[in-house]
Amino acid sequence: MRYYRPESTADALRALATSPASSRVLVGGTDLLVALRHRTVVPDLVVDIKAARDLREPIRADDAGVTFGPTATMAQVATHPVVQEWFPALVEAALLVGSVAIRTRASLIANSANGSPAADTSPPLLGLGAEVTIASTEGERTVPLRDFFLASRRTLCEPGELVTALRVPRPAAGSASAYLRMTRRRGVDLATCSVAAVVEADGSVTAGLGAVGPTALLGGPTGPLDLGSAEELEHALDTLLEHATPIGDVRAGRPYRAAMLRVLAKRAVLRAAGRRAGADDQGRSVQ
Image (cartoon, rainbow, N blue to C red; front, side, top):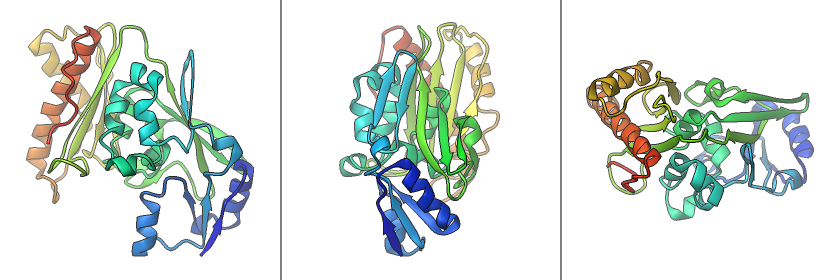
């Protein structure tokens, strides 16, 4: 196995193009290094992009939104003041990824680029309307994150390509978001199911869903709602969850996972609605 540490994105892409099917990108390494140790992945080439000059800026905020680079860690995401103000659901998700040590290394972009349907940060990024920029030696393209996921562990990022940026637009005035997940145990664990709710000023709702389908899913948007109406809220949940296909596995049976998904979705919607009104109950996770 060869190891290469390029100094620019262009150098990285040229290296990946030499053996696209048998190369891997290293940034945080929290998944790749474990896979290498257990030999579940045996690449010919590992391209470590942490030293690439044009990828070193982890987070850049402007009036229109926030751009995250590949080196943006979960810890940096969770403590960035603009991210905290605009994207509370993303902060909540980032704080639930692994342990403190893992969060100082784990890459936000890699968490989604791995294509796991249970990735914590994918649901809030979906609900918030994120886009990803994918680069290769042929050029680059930007696609909505909702189109990025193809199947479990499969994305639009082809061999030889690299996700160079993730862009989240500034939320509309009067909107708010929240993220909740269920796990088998307290502490470090994968989500049994998860929901990120984004409530707009008119009461319409969008939801990102995790671990209830072959990919992370986007539900909604609903029409404008009176969230004080129990009947309207139940109809909204039907809309948000209509594409979820929970399965039974070692983490939960299908009926239980489906039931808890609805519970989490309702709580997340109400929590986001409470934040719109300035009433945050401060909770983050359901175990």
